[in-house]
Length: 115
Image (cartoon, rainbow, N blue to C red):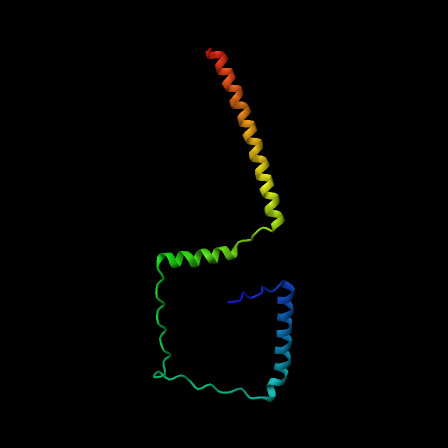
């Protein structure tokens, strides 16, 4: 199943304008043509009832809902992902050094106090 390309805002506006233009030109020609009369629905001609859809089990529902949510996610570009990975790595190394220094400092301090 091929994914449908999303239209940009300009493309949507252009399509809507073209549709309005087509409707406007058709409505000018409309008085010459007579509209078809639709026969009234009788009580014996009822539409067929839709069959209820079979309930999906837990794992199917989880799979479909997860897939739907992942399609809504705004994924970062490759450059953004790389930059954020570097930032996280630098902050982690800095915090490890910071906490390691204070651990060493307090170890020495308690060793001097407790003898």
